[in-house]
Length: 255
Ligand SMILES: Nc1ncnc2c1ncn2[C@@H]1O[C@H](COP(=O)(O)OP(=O)(O)OP(=O)(O)O)[C@@H](O)[C@H]1O
Image (cartoon, rainbow, N blue to C red; front, top):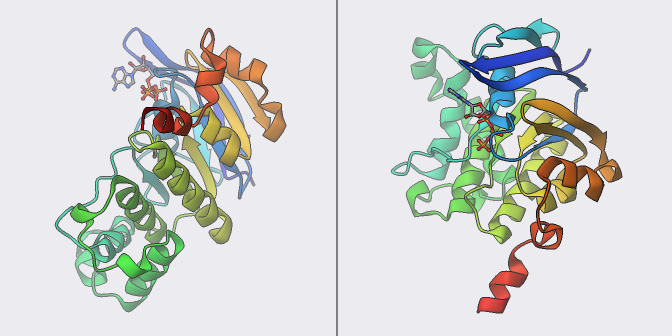
């Protein structure tokens, strides 16, 4: 059984074709990076997989079940970490438990001992156990994103999606957050799909790569198969050296 199966998926918004006849299968436990320039369809693909967007044509299956509405068993980390700033890292993580319950159950669940343990374990996974009581609003962007990941882990879904999770972070924090995401997925045996526009991070952390251009699947491969030629095809006409740099060199040069 594949974890995610996308079959001839087309998504149109009026005249705009966001996804055009996309098909692939992801096996359980794979760590997949979705690549492509802005507007290539990365967010739309992830949103169709967790049921936030409905296909115009084709279908998406999660663990062999057709996705017909928003699925709580697929957790999602967004670019804007959406943590509740006035709450501690721990309380934010604990809210992940609410996503998998209905409202009444949620109220009762908030005091569930197992959920509390899960929240602490998730904070440990993202290296924030010592900061559990710290107010999220006082944390750095990278730490807040790690709280967002902890919250997604508390949801205890088998599938973790992340839509540009490090786009708003500096290169160092982006690397740290990606490291925690990869470790979390490995430790917990999750199937992960992460959209990124930083190719250097994708090459460093990705196991499998799915490349989109104009809503079409133009690349699907593993590790070293993501060659510079493929990157050039995906991102075309850019200064490759600058594109692949982490940004650290530039930062140092200006300091
Ligand atoms: N809700 C929407 N209504 C209309 N058009 C949309 C909507 N969502 C996405 N689109 C369009 O679909 C195309 C693909 O967008 P999508 O956000 O999936 O790309 P992306 O690769 O994630 O880009 P970015 O990295 O900028 O978010 C774009 O042309 C976009 O303008």
